[in-house]
Length: 97
Image 1 (cartoon, rainbow, N blue to C red):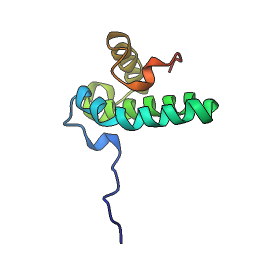
Image 2: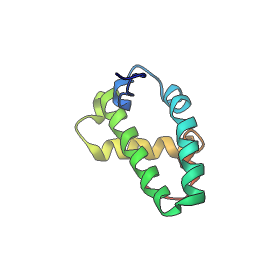
Image 3: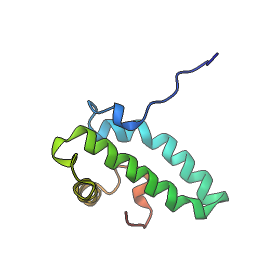
């Protein structure tokens, strides 16, 4: 029997704002980044890119205008990243989506 509830994907939290999502995700993301930058640095960029893909999927579920196009979601995420570069922990790294 499970002792905890499995976490759902980010796209379930479409009623949350981006700031709420960042508050929820950042502690775990910081932990992963602290571990992987010390012990397995080659895994950091794939983790960051995967997180961005999840954020794009969340945006496509939340905003109707982004749903038909992954390119629109990518452009939206790039704009958010330029406006708020410290919103998510992995955006402090130097990589591009």
